[in-house]
Each structure stands twice: as structure tokens, then as C-alpha cells.
Length: 379
Image (cartoon, rainbow, N blue to C red):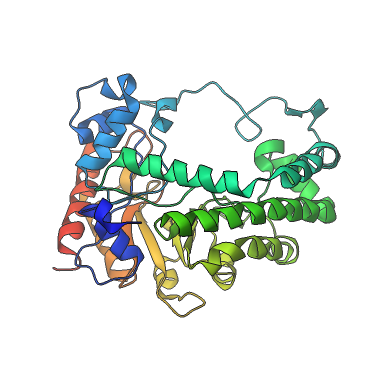
């Protein structure tokens, strides 16, 4: 990243990523789902978001002083109304009455295996054989430069969406069929992880080249939900056997260029934290404290190289913002700062902000971002 192309808040974000001494604490994007909040924060007229979603969404991010944005989803709140989700699409994990893939009705673990072996595995092998590294490098660079141009010079675009990793396929098959197959046919699951990792390794070599050749910001957020409020979705011992080895090997090209990889946390992921650090993850984002994520303990941990973690700390969107008071929002921000790492700290929200959050809490959140962005840890 050419530093002369960015300024202000974006430069504060880049210096924080690089662990340089900074006075202020930069803020990460927010993603409110209530249209009125987006419009009020943007200083726009009522109805502006539906008429011009991207322009209004960007105006909001600029108005509140967002320093760092990785995932750019300006139209995501369009699926929401004042009282929640208003979309009509139903998928394997969102209430579909029947899941059919390539003519196979997914109603049993055996159906999952049949589809994996008959369709998913051959498709992955074809993708591996056809992979074009040069084309992928050009695609990533063009995509990231285009997004940075849309954000402008005062907001830094960091990496999201162009790194591959092996993942659970519950989104394809549904939770019950997929995890039943995971328990009954671990050898098939490992073949799936292995093939995904083979393709991810090719992709990640291209991603590493793109980051190095274009000088992209050295931060990337990995995002795959592997836990719920109780803990990991499968036994940790099984992940050690059939997932972590493939996950680790596909990250190697990115680790060689010193890209700071952080992990998005949904649910109670505490059991995985140490293992993620062992394979080279250098930070975390998205803490559900009420589910058992121990923010203070995590912030005391170190990378495998002995450095402070990079932490994108967030005010809780499931507890404090919707149900707390302005004072509690303010107190949670202060706690995040006090217990966060001394270098490499960003402030944000733990996830998207659902409709129904009191406007006073939104104001306090944004005021808190501004306070810490301009004054840092000063009292």
C-alpha cells in the first residue's frame, strides 16, 4: 500500500496494523441493519438508503470516521425491515422445507456422502486442474484497488473474501444431514477438507503474490463459523485429526509474506483459540462475551512469534447495544480499551447491528469511537 495514496483515518489504521506508535485507537466498520440508523448517521433524508444504498452506506461510514473496512456489504441491510428479516429466500440452514442438490434429496448422512463423492469432489478436482494463477492474481489486485478507490483515501480497505480455506459444508446440506455425515463418515469428510485445501493452496499462492505485488495492506480477516454458544460445532479432537492439518498447510504461502491473519469469532470459540495461534493466526475479531469468549484472557495471549495480537474489539450487538443503556455502552468501550492489547487494537461492534437498537446507544457508540480515535487511552 502506497502511504501517499491514503491519509487521515486510513493512515491511522495502517500504522495500527503495522504496530507503529499511534496516539488514537482506530475504528472498524459498523453494519447497522436498521435503515433509519444508517440514514441518520449518514446525515441523509429518510428513505435515502433504499433509493441509493451504496452511496448512503458509504456516507455513513465516512461520517462516523470509519478507519478500516474489510468486508464491503452496502446492500446487506436491504434484507431487513424495522422488525427483522424480510427476505423470502430459504436455504439449507434458513428454513428450507427440502434441500436438493444435483437431483439428490439431502435427507440423510448417506445422501450427503453420495453428493460429495458424485458431485462435490469431481467439481473440486476440475477446479484444481483448471486453476489459473496469473488470472487470479490480476483479479484480486483489480478487485482490491477498485474497492479502495470507492472508499476514498481516508478509509483503508483490508483483506476479506479472497483467501481460501477448508470449511464445513452445512450451508450446502443443512446442519443435521451434514454433521451426521461428519460423525459417521470422517474419512469422507477428510477427503473433502483435503480437496478444499488443495484448491485453497493454489488460490492462496495467488493471493500472496497479489498482496506482495500490489502492496496491499498486510491484514486479512478469515471468516468461517465453527462454533455456537455452547462451543465448537464438532469435537476438537476430530478437528485436530482431519481439519487443522489441511487448514495449516493451505495458509503457508500467506504466512511466508508476513500477512497478519485474524479470525472472526462467532459463538464460544475458546477451545480453538490456542490451536489457531499455533498455526499462525495473529488476532481475532467478533467476540460474543456472553457465550464465554474471554476477551481479557485472549488479549493477554501472544502470537507464535511472541507479539501482541491484533484485536478488533466490538461492543456486543446481542447484549449491550440492544438491551443496555448509553452508560453501559460507554463502560463496555472503556473496558475493551483498558483490557485490549497496547498495540494493534481497533474498536467496532461484535457483528452486524440488528434493528431495534435504541438511537441513544448508537449515538454513544459513535461518540465513543470518535473519543478514542482522537484521544487514545488518555483520560
